[in-house]
Image (cartoon, rainbow, N blue to C red):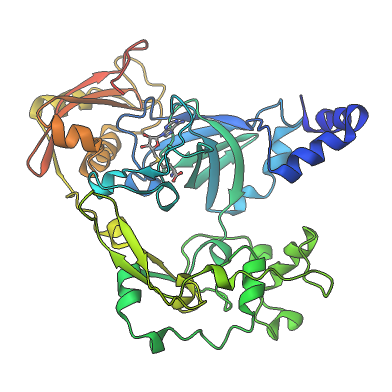
Length: 405
Ligand SMILES: C[S@@+](CC[C@H](N)C(=O)[O-])C[C@H]1O[C@@H](n2cnc3c(N)ncnc32)[C@H](O)[C@@H]1O
């Protein structure tokens, strides 16, 4: 059913139901399309898009959502990157585990919401991908970590001024620095409470300069005369469009008391669970307020994983087999669907393997087992040794072959 029809129907039949569900935060999602990806199975799919910039895919906006799906993409080609929100449809079942074991913690547990684990209560994924081109109602993407057939529920443009604090430091460094160093920067005239109203934004008050992603000029956060005083970029007017306008009648939420001032970080404890203890006489400023405006922080485990970056090598036989593959739509021999050449494929395979795609279980308990995965139209067999991965065999993917999960 298309958007217009659905709205009409809601209005005619049960006008209040739609809004009640929205109020309760319950929505029935309708995929706007399904990802066509070079990754057919979860196995071997990178854990984040940054792992393999050559991983390609397509997304065609469905005609069941818009009469003219191409209209929904007008202007999007002016962005270099877009966020893709999708459903982890191959999770098997919905997860209700509050603690998970991200591979980078090598077996230790942490709270699900401090990770990017697929196993989360609402099974929603968020990936920042490069937008290569737009043709009609189809987006051509690269740098994906999403498998073929994944239902996509939304696309949003990546806008560095909104989405990316200027610099990232480690949580532990922030904790070690003297408290005086973390005085809030005075160039920000937004009150803390107002910042909370804006969705806990860490957006810098000053426009950010150093961004490689491109944004259409109309979207640049250029302060106008009215925003100069507060340092709020012009685009804040969007909040007003969404009825979030801050006015005298709108009570400002007070969040301060809910946040302890300092968190003492303790690394993995005896039961393998990461624990952060709060100081007893916690003050009222959140941990996030410990960092300077425009700065963000992440735990060290996100950056310095206990998992080594592996060296990747190909046996001469595997290399020879890969060279048989031809550019898309070529005849006489196996051809790629997404990669343009065997060299590109080799680079992508190396990227996937050097990040060690094995689960913690596989890494620890079954080190000597062969590992299989597929990428584009290539089926790869490899093994892992101490600090390296070796590709043993490259075969064309068989249509009905089922890779290990
Ligand atoms: C760690 S998640 C991160 C995804 C996204 N960047 C995020 O942060 O929400 C990436 C992994 O999800 C898995 N995956 C990708 N698409 C999936 C799908 N449709 N259903 C279940 N798992 C999926 C793949 O195994 C991939 O390695």
